[in-house]
Amino acid sequence: RKRELHTQLLEVGFLKNLTHVEKIQIADALEPQAFEDGEYLIRHGEDGKWFYIVIEGVVEVYGRDSDGVVIKVCDFSVGDCVGELEFIHNHRTVADVRAKGRVRTVRMSRPHFELCMGPVIDILERNAGADNPTYNYYNATTSGAEIHATTSGFSFGAALADDDDTASSGSDGDDGEDA
Image (cartoon, rainbow, N blue to C red; front, side, top):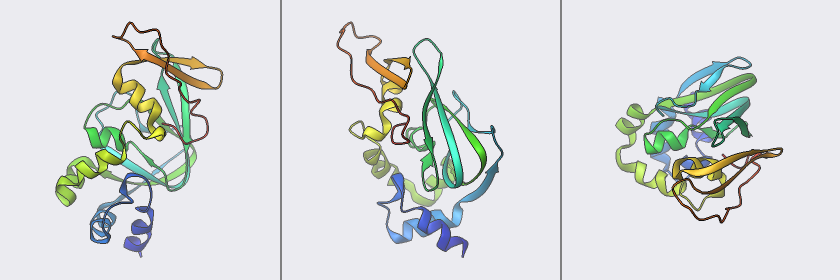
């Protein structure tokens, strides 16, 4: 039953293009994890060692603007993946992810994933590429773009090392579709 539930969860996000056998391998390796209101799943600046799939509840994602001011990026709920980009790219996390109320998740560590899946990381990287609007905040942060807190969330402009004054349009990130 656990395998069936977890395999169904893997029909979302960056895992949906895996084969049935690959999904079974991952489903068997997922570890349940529960969080209470305000608890951190992920802290800004940590090594990206885990990815989570929300199976009950809502999590809030908080990033930082270019001045270090905490900004709300989005919410994620049942079926959404969090932490997958840092997990895929093996770098420090760019946001805090906190439970909003009681939250249940399943998670997997990067070493365990690679033990199960090996070179599938290449497939996952394509799904989380720069052309995917779901990842505006992440891509802006990792590219060095200047990020600004706004009343509706955030906006971002040219890369910090770039003297071009042309601003890119950012997302308010408040609809759960941008992270």
